[in-house]
Length: 137
Length: 270
Image (cartoon, rainbow over all chains, first blue to last red; front, side, top):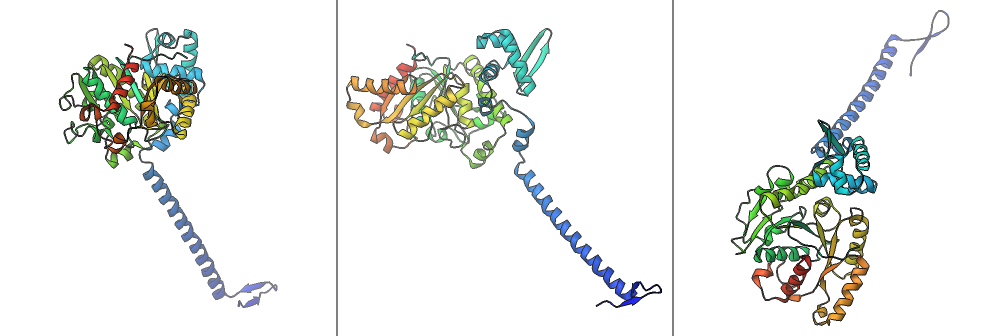
């Protein structure tokens, strides 16, 4: 129970000793809260470490950042694009002309599909003189 | 749909099934050995990285320790040639028999699981590239892939990179329905050339008349909309023998091999 004294203008004042006790209590409470925060951040760090260890082959992370023309992903692509990727797999590296010979579609169609696949990150392309070669990354 | 048969020379043929236990590996291994005995140069690759079995099937011909596994090739740690084991001498074949073995150790199996999609795309790329190494550089006549059942990367990469897939099924309704779904949802999407091989069908088909057999074949061809390259009855003694046994050399007089010859005839264009 705190002793309340009345000051000159009648406002309540606290005894210095009691004030210190109050302060100590408050600081202890802050300490407890800080401890619990440190503890939680420790658990977060542990979870983070565990996560990194579990996915150390990076496969999980790679799947997020790098689109890949794997067979199951290809199933979700429109047939027209899938056909171009399959031709690229078969030829390893091909111009739109080569692709069109393989798929028996127009060169312009292959060029459009291959460039679309480059934009989607499934194919890469390189230029050699006037020719542009498409290939699986 | 052209119900034509395919020529195996210069081809990569994948053996696949919708579920395990259809006898896919037994048929594929015996077929590879039979082709090699006939004088063809054959490469036989185990793409079932989750449940490798060729190591046991060809245990007689494989010197230990195996220096390089097919896993090493898939991980770009060696060339395909380095990952192939020549077992021609041990099986006294007229041609050549090169086997690519999947590593059966738990570590290797675990290592092949949970790979990223980018890695699987790279693996598919490597499987597409084997054609030139085998046929142009190593003088191989045909390549047979033994894949894992169902739709998983190790099997679909093999199927998609092959020239033709032989889908092995029994007459069990789960197998038949599973194959039908797989053909519609996967093979058709990739416009994959494929044929059906019926294995372990009723033992009584052995004594069926040709007409009755043809009726079963045409019913199945209509259902799967694919040619059926063979109907192999269920032989109790084959089931009772070790799955690793190679009947072609261990029991050359077995009627199973007569059925296999029929399959070979249909797979060849001659």
